[in-house]
Image 1 (cartoon, one colour):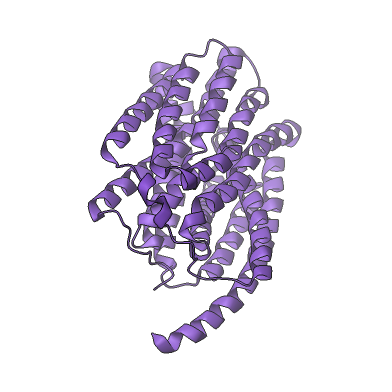
Image 2 (image 1 turned 90 degrees about the vertical axis):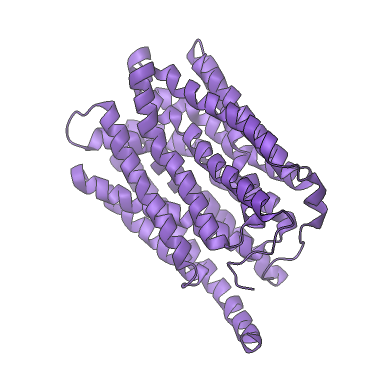
Length: 411
């Protein structure tokens, strides 16, 4: 079996396609809802006469919850029901967004955002495990799923800015909240219960490591998750404001949102490309190449302005989102289906729990040295990430070469 093929699912082909379609939609919504506030905050600064640094900090508990609560979500999904956890995801996000829209003050808004982070944390460990279990072509399926998530990120700034312009900042929360609630009802009615299939999940990974090597790679992947999470969140959260400050001219918020959306779309193109490349290039080699490309892009953006800034950020976002797809494929290859919900929970816990730190870093460094300092710190983190990926690739390379040598005569 190819490293990009998956075992045949016990669900019918039609059920699998429908389930995967909902998972892809959930990925788009997940990233969209978490990035409404970074655009809304620009408008709130005018309403409340407060600084960007003060207001963006209100999102810290939400982003911390986004990572922290992925751990119980992954455990519950493996032990109880992945399908039911996705229902809770849709419904909980919808209610939280409606609460944010109705918030009478900033304190209530912060509470609603925290609840949003709790429910939004469900998607990644649960949705990714569902996709891996049901997809027949993992590389392309994960790539397309990644594109859906990237579209959510890409459209969040532009659509939120449009809603703010047409309906005010409350409308930017209310409309997506209604969409999430309606989707919860549709998903519950159309996707069958999966609790009966939990006992049938495989407990054997595609490729096994010696215990010492497995422990070493797990520790290194923990570092990858932490550093990649910081680069991801600092860049995506700050991007609308970076564009706003660095274009060199006063531009309306709706144009800032549109440019941010265009930059994020580069990540979608990169993920589709990676979905094809993994069929031709070894995962661990591609892993290193993308990490180095990410470093180049972030470092280039440190002092860039105007059109050059847009190019540098586009390169950075392309590499950041390409790496997400490769990371998930590596985990799918070396983790058994019965454990994937929990393993993805740990991976996304580490990746997203640092999102709270990322928001704090933006607030602290922006106040002291602007986005030049913020991006310089991000480049230093990207350098550490590249070093760790090189070490992982060296360790994995030996195992894969030996496995290819043993398997080749039988193919």
